[in-house]
Structure formats: structure tokens, C-alpha cells
Image (cartoon, rainbow, N blue to C red; front, side, top):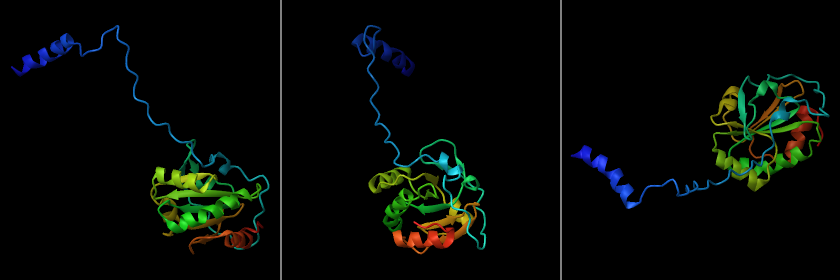
Length: 200
């Protein structure tokens, strides 16, 4: 009986006019919401030496950046941190972290004052793509952004702090790691001059 019902239903629907005919135009699929453009810059320049890169200052050389590959927020080829060309200031942050949000505008201003002497790089960690996108838009953040959906970068550095700032010299070695909380313009300028020999 059940088998008979399965055979009759399509026939009854056709008789009732509930199926599309060859003469009837197909209905368009519902429009999907267009993806918003990323506020962040492309990551390809991260593996190119900054145009006016400051030389490595004298002092104790630190460890190299970890051998870790992260995706770029804007897509394109993933970036191995060992391939990042310094000097660079790396800011690890998340949208759910209030001190991270507080300091992001200072990092944006720093990136605008870089003048090809150093790079400012974001690493969005333990966050959602939507959260990072919204904060980037709201705060006008435009520097390149890498994604670390776990916390692989922080684990490699053996640091579990938000926000976290890592200063890397021209040779790709870590000169300073800062986990003191939200940094402002003056503190960032002091750190760059002291550890990277760059005046901003």
C-alpha cells in the first residue's frame, strides 16, 4: 500500500499543476548576502624587506620567529612566520579582549607612520572571523592580518597573554615580547626605539 502511495503522489502533483513544466521559467535562487570586503591589507608584502628597513641594532639577538604557517585574513598564500621580513611589530589580539580593542588604534597609527621602515602585523587569535572583521571595520584597522584560530603562535612563544606584542629585528629575530596590557602611542614609540632602533 505504501509503495502505491509513493507512485501516486508524483502523478497527483502533476495533475494538480504543482510541478514545473518546460514552458514555465525557473525561479531564481534566493540571493545570498554578499561578503563584506576585508578591512585588512594583503599579507604578500610581509615576506618582502621593507623599502627603508632599519638595520639591526647592536645588542643581544633573540630567538627566530617560530616555524609556523598562518593564513592571511584576506586569503592568498599562507605566511610562514620565519619568512616575515623585519623589522616588524606583531600584535596578537582578539575581538573579545577589551585591552586589545583599546590598543588597536595605536597600532593602526603606528602602521601609518612606518614609512617603509618596518612592518605592523596583526595576528588574530582564538577569535571568530566575524568578530575580527567587525572590529577591523569599527576601528579602521588596515594593516595585514594573520589568523591563528587556536593559539599556536602564543604556544610557540610560551606566552599566554592578550594582548601580546612581539618586536622583530631586520634579521627576523625576536628582540622583545611585551605582555603588559594595552599599549598607547608613546609606549609603542619607546619600545620601537629601544629594541629596534627605530624612531617614530
